[in-house]
Length: 224
Image (cartoon, rainbow, N blue to C red; front, side, top):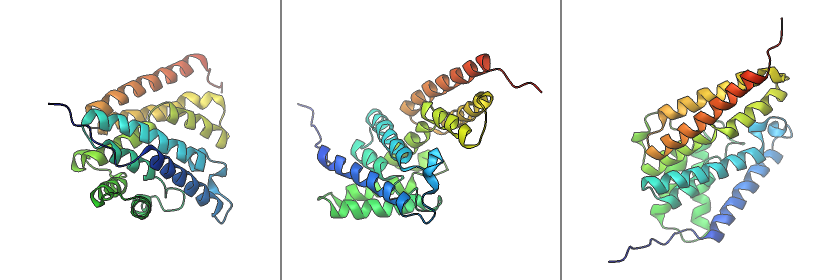
């Protein structure tokens, strides 16, 4: 008996259109701000960073979902929409607002099954869950894990170093700032549940620790 191949409900062209919509929505969020864009000077609050983070989460989420037997299509579409409202809604509300935008988009672009739309929107709404990840659906768990892991490695370290300039810090603070990413990496390693996410967390934590140790060894501290 041959292996049944499941046909994806989302074509490559549909996914590309979704990604373009998310990118444009984020950019519009910046342009519509009354103060001209709070994210203009701070790396975490730029449309460019947020979209790059979203694409990273999609990639990591796909990897975890594929290895853990979750619905890859649900996870990658939820990954696209999970932070779409991040730049315009309050932090406590951005997941719920993102789910609302995702539902409106999916119900008006294509003929996606209601069950697929429900799963995507549920994962988006739950991606800020702070409790036990085993309480979530498998797809939502993959999304939460991917979201944490993107901030726990080289991407998080690079952003911390950029933050030094924003805060007028000197290069001697680099090890301290990367140390914060290491702490985040360790917290992520403790929270994730899937074997795949644990493996990714281990590799990222090891690299960040190496970077911190390298900085400590070669960047001298300021004298009193």
